[in-house]
Image (cartoon, rainbow, N blue to C red; front, side, top):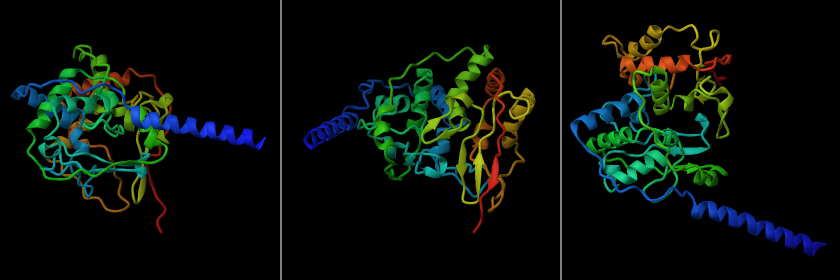
Length: 324
């Protein structure tokens, strides 16, 4: 009996070891980086700059944010520097740092390697990238928009700042290898179809990543865009609001004008970000970046959000933590 048990345990151990070895050595498997050379015209760079700073807001994470000010706006001149930390206090299964996207960090990357990283989550050396950067979303975008973002990144001035290695907790250090998938690109919808175009922008902006409950590395898709993801500050816990058109707990009572002006208020020439002290209301929402989005795009996002099924989901948005 003992021999049978020992034999069974040996087989089970070998099976687990083989499975984990396969995950670590054979995955991710999304193919080679494409052999491309993106056009770097003034028009493409301008479009890429708009996407990277106003819609996909790449520079929200890949810059140094001033957390002493309301909503932590990026410090001018640090665009592309990287180094922002994302950890367990934000619900992530590990500690992750944004990477340097200036020529200092990407100088030896081909355009194809950058394209593959953005759209599938596989780094230059074949390692998986945990989707703090929402590469599954970008893999469902228009190729031209991704190319324009790359053109913009190539135009950034060099900032000498070394990348800090990221580290996934167990078991995410194995699971992360299974996350990268081949991209499924689409064509950017016609702006005349506001709902469909708005859905495209919501995907590019990864609104659902923050406005969907997220626990233990999993999203609650039954409450997609209904808010509920929590972020822990030293003095308070923030929880994202409901974006569905529920009248009582979401955006159901909001007009298009009120929605647009909520963003544009942060681009008013008279607006000055408030200095934040312990106990003050704070948000991680990069209002000043999204505030630079074109009104036409904001209206499209509003139209899409209003087309969603209303979800009644009350949220306590800001709760002060117990102070010692």
